Amino acid sequence: MSDEHELTPAEAAALVRVPTHGDDKYARGVLGLLTGSSRYPGAAVLGVEAALRTGVGMVRYLGTARAADLVLQRRPEAVTEPGRVQAWVVGSGMPLLGADATGAAGEPLDSATAEHVRAALASGHPLIIDAGAITPTVLAAATGPVIITPHAGELARLTGADASAVRAEPVAAARAAAERFGVAVLLKGHTTRVVAPGGPVLVARQAPAWLATAGAGDALAGILGALAATHAAASPLDNTPVDLAHLARLGAAAAVLHGLAATRASAGGPLTVLDLCAALPATIAALLDASAR
Image (cartoon, rainbow, N blue to C red; front, side, top):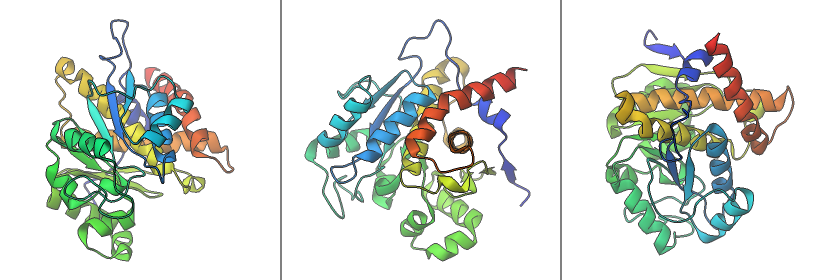
């Protein structure tokens, strides 16, 4: 299609906000994460790890107690108290969320986490909505710009389509969901496609086949959250609001970083998601160095 554009590594590098000497941790962006559950606490650890290694001033994790303990064991610099946030990641590793932000299926959220989810949706900040939070009721409650990050099965569940139909026509499925729900859509796969309502389809093809592994999507959400938080913190200065079109560009950049870091971590063989996360700083540094030449 004529409106498809494959995002280049140089274009992704241009969407990485490099801190200046005058920045403090708040100016570099604060990302809030409401992810993980007692059943799937690892999703929280992976999202926090990816966000911190992408580059953000602070990560504020407000999920369940078991996940918070594991997050702090892995990343003691994470903050687990409420406070200032410039963008949110919601849903990775959570049960399906209903209208009251409690678990609609599987284990329910505890009351404190459910209240944090409701507050995040009402905050007006950019929202990365993943996994269990990709439901019509959650999207209807969101007041800020939203990008959803489904795989084909999750997009089919959201729209009522058949997953095989989504896989057969991914561009049409992503565009239809973007228009129907008024959100940007990042449809994950070996080829990732990102589209905002009325916008072009942005494509990322850097991911190696080895990246088809549990937890990869949790890391992608963390990378995208970090990009959104840094841009939201900077937008009053650079006049670039984090609207749906900008979220779509950041989503495509996150997919490029995710794929390139996986390729670096893999070196042609298997990888773990923590390997991918560990490769993010060098991947970003190489992109910034190449773009400066």
